[in-house]
Structure formats: C-alpha cells, structure tokens
Length: 500
Image (cartoon, rainbow, N blue to C red; front, side):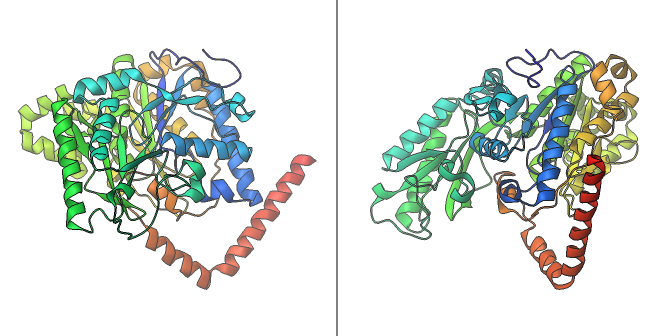
C-alpha cells in the first residue's frame, strides 16, 4: 500500500518487467558523511548540503514509487541504524528511510511497517526489530539448517556452563556514539583492559543483537592470558560446533578471533551454498537472489557501495547462474573456471575469448555503483576492469552523487535492453532524463566508527589519513581558509539572488 505521505508502508509493489531494485550500502554510499560529522558537525554549509541532499533523494524516491524499490544493506546492526535515524530526526535532516533494511552484512531483512513522516513527527520508527523477512530466514534454514533461536540457545547453554554473565546489546561500539545501546554502557559489560579475573563468575560475555541470522560475541579480555582460560575458550568452540552439528546446523566463524576494545570476538553466520561455492552469509546473498528474479521478470538490479564489505555484491563475476557455470566447466575445466571467477583479470580474459559468456554478461540485468570518497580514494580498485570498455557494468561516482548514479545506471541498461526500456515505468523514464544535484558535504574521512561499521574485519587507511592531515596543517591552512571563506561568500550571494 502506498500513500502520498511517504514512499512505502506495509506491502511492496508488485515487480514485473521494467522495474528496478536498488541495494545501497549506508555509510559513505547513501550517507555522504562520516558518523562523527552526521552527529555533531554544526557548520552551516554542512547542514545545508546534507539537508538538501536528503530532500532531493526523498523527492526522487517519491517520484519513482511505482517502479523502484530501495533497500539499505549495511554493516550496521538494527540498533546502530536506528541511532542514525534518531540523529536525523533530532537534527531535522529528514533522512529518507528505505523500503527494506538489511543489517549486519546480509543478516536480517527488516520490513517497513510505518511512515517516514510519522517518524519525523515524533512517532515510532517504521521498522521493528522483530518484524523481518521470514521467507528469507526459511530459505537460509533450508540451505544451511541455521535456526537463530536454536543457535542462541546452544551458545547460552555452553556459556552458562562456565558461569559467564551474559549481556545482550545493540552494538559493540562505544558509549559516546551509541549511548545505552552500547555493550559498554552502564550496567552492561566492562572495558577493563588487561584485567585478569580471579573468579570466573565475574566474567561477562556480550551478545550483539544481530537478529535471527548472525550471532556475535565479545569475550572477557583475559580469555587467552592463562592456560586454564584458554582451555575454556577452546572448549566453548568445540562444544558449540558439536551441538550445532547435532542439530544439523552448518555455520561458519569469522576469520579467526578479532578484537573489540581488547576483548576477543567471535562471529557466527550460516554457511550458504551459492552458485559457485560455499560461503559465509554476506550482502551478496540478497543481491544475487534479486538478480535471479530480475532475469525472470526483465527487471534490473542496481547495487552501490564504497568499501571492502561491498566487494562481493558489486562483483559482476559472482552473478553467473549455476547452469552457465556448469557449461563453462564442461568447456574449460573446473580449475580454470574456479580461478576465473575468483580472479577478475582472468575472468575478463575469459569474456574476451568466449562469445556465449560475453553475450550473457553484457545482457545481465545488473549494474553497480562505486562511491568514491571525497578525498578521491576508491577502495574497490580491483573492480576497475568492469568500469570501462565493452564489459562495463559499474560506474564510479563521488559522495553525494548516488541518485545520479542510479539514474545513469538505469539509462545505460535501457540502451542495452530495448525491451526493458519499452516497459520502463513512466515515472522512472521521466526521472532518468533529469540530472540529480550533486551534494557532498566536506567532513572527516578518518572517522573510526565508519570503518568499524563496514564489517567484521574491515581494512583501514587510518595512517594515510593522518599523514595527509599533518601535511595539510603544514602547508595548506591558509589556502583552505581562503577556500572556505570564498565558498561561504558564493553561498551567501546565491541565497541573496534567491531572496530577490
């Protein structure tokens, strides 16, 4: 059901030929700002730019409501995303909320049950933690045996054996950013670096509220410090695996224990059988499922991201259907095809020499958007072979240009697929002819929270930013202040013209 109050409420539109589904990362892709600036930056230009960006994007979504479904797929938890929405409301940014929200890198898909306008007028958030896509969860259970309630019970049973105090929270990130939603807020678990407990009953384990499809633990900081405690850690792992196997649950851990606030972490997720291999549940699961439907219905899937946890869903080589892969294996051998799918350079060479595969690839109802950061950095350089030439499937835009990227992607696919263009909804057809405004506020690109929210094991360019910032302080301060002064003067002149 749709109303003119907002884009969407209880039911999704029926997607037939000529429709488009957009899956966008949140931080630095849809949101053209760091977490820190979004929360605290009071610069007039920043506020004006971010407000205009959201207003324009909201109008775009309203004007395409009959043909476009917009999904945010993020590394954030539900609670972390809710915090950002609450900030948008508090600061009167009126950030448009998506049709659906997929959290924690492919975990639960939350269904919209309310209106943006109601939320921004002080009523409830239009997503509920417990209202999720049960069809997706049932399909993943069929594939992997994963049952979120059973997994949590197994973990609780094992942890209780050792007398751990168990605390659930929305996020393992800091109190400064997330307040009472943080695992380290008052009354929850402690961030006492290097402390060794004399009594195991004092141990606390945090369980992040990831929903039904993933489970993330933070363990005591001294779990590896003493032989007895290390043995307990190993025993926890063994028992969880044994109990899960007995229940027919096929899961995977992250790439070894990582660390949050010097507390070791474990991340459990379903093992998915894909078109090419078995892999940990990621953002790609949802975009691939949408792609298969788009192939059947003559629709289009657009995915957008900016960093490493978006790589899989942006890589067009990972969208080949299993039947086609089997044909390629018969032709070239399993080893070569496996290598090609996992190596973009080799895959492009295969496209060049196999006309059947090339035709399939060119006609794929898939388009990608890489959002380049304000400092010019592109964290997805390995996808460059697909950003130009005959096999271009991806375009690169700057922060604040996602709307323009969506329009360009639809237009490019229309030129490739005349049938899709003929059946494109009138509102979408009208929108792709209009150029979107480019709004990218200047902000702090080195915000640690953005990196943490990008995934379980994000890559970091922290020192690169520090070096650039120090260089800037040494030689560029005067130029920068002059630039800011000039920008404000131009802005004031434009405002005066409007007022006249």
